[in-house]
Length: 324
Image (cartoon, rainbow, N blue to C red):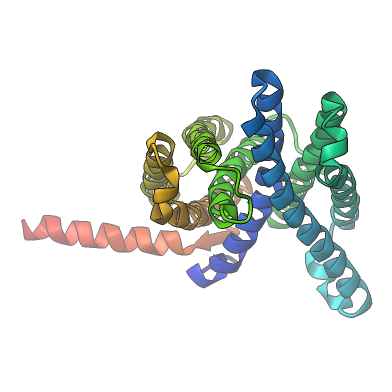
């Protein structure tokens, strides 16, 4: 029996994927800014790191509460929901990872002024918190992967398809963190009045990192192909790949426009549109991962709406050729 994934089925997971990307990417952007501040000794980078830390802590708190609520609700009120919590070890460990990230990153954020005198200790606390966030995200991805392919081993093998997907998820998470960071800076520009020079620097700095992660992320597709070349079916990935490029190009151009602008705050439309394109990119990538999971499972387990779209494109193209 084959499971069909429609476009309506993708919408909610795509939004959840975007939230998870912000959960992992925004704290990482804070840590990256803090490390840059230590290396370059610039005050602006520390201010930017603190703003990212405040936003990142909100996402960590939200994910931690949501994870705890889901575990509690499914255990006490909806026992039948255990069908999607089959691998309890992932979710129970996820609670611990959330608590570790909340504890260490919370101290990193809330004790900012005090720990500012002990920068390496401050950096260490933030690093532990960010690693916990990334481990939670990676473990959640592996839990979902095992739901799609129950015959997969308990732990991913070195040649598993999971690894290139996880690395790309981290890179796209950093890109999502950059996009949301731009939006947050725009929102806080009046409350955190650090001056025009600061926002010229911070928006440009964030946009440049967004360009970097956006450009590097497609390189993992080569790794993914090398791992799946024996079962690779290009027909199922042509359209998702084309849409990925189609959405990625405007994001890069918007990031570049913000980074090169002498007055980045005037590019409000670009800042507002960036997260929308990132959401579309994550949705398209989610479809790709589902198709790859079907290939790796060596069986027709599921199919997505992209196959129907691809068939319609082929029928339209063949009709045009016959007309000529």
